[in-house]
Image (cartoon, rainbow, N blue to C red; front, side, top):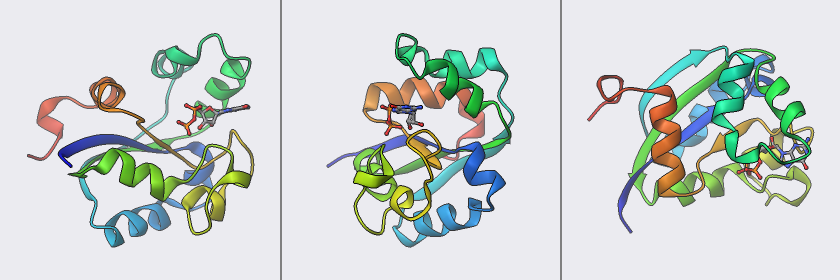
Length: 140
Ligand code: GDP
């Protein structure tokens, strides 16, 4: 185990459905520290840049449109093994396959509209955190 940081996004469906508090409550209950947080409304170009690794996937256009459909809440999370721990709280991409009690299982309505994002590895976490936050915005 090691101290890690990861990027969390409460997606437009989560924000518009009033789930910010619910997600934050679950983070705090899991002893995951929020070390940066803000609300942004992504442009199409910003969403495409964030999801550049998915550029060839058939759902790329739909996903980037969805992610620009309203504001999102982005957070930097910190803790021991937080990348995997937060992915466990989120649940599988497809909410129908997600474990009971996970955020996606409890709240997602669609494979795309799945409420939350979380980085999947240390390298992607570093890229994704830097995409939204500079060093001065992250609590040490
Ligand atoms: P994640 O790491 O669990 O978020 O999953 P991925 O990195 O594979 O996909 C990124 C995001 O694209 C997911 O969270 C969904 O919002 C969306 N997505 C994934 N698979 C599909 C799909 O088959 N169809 C659509 N429309 N969206 C998808």
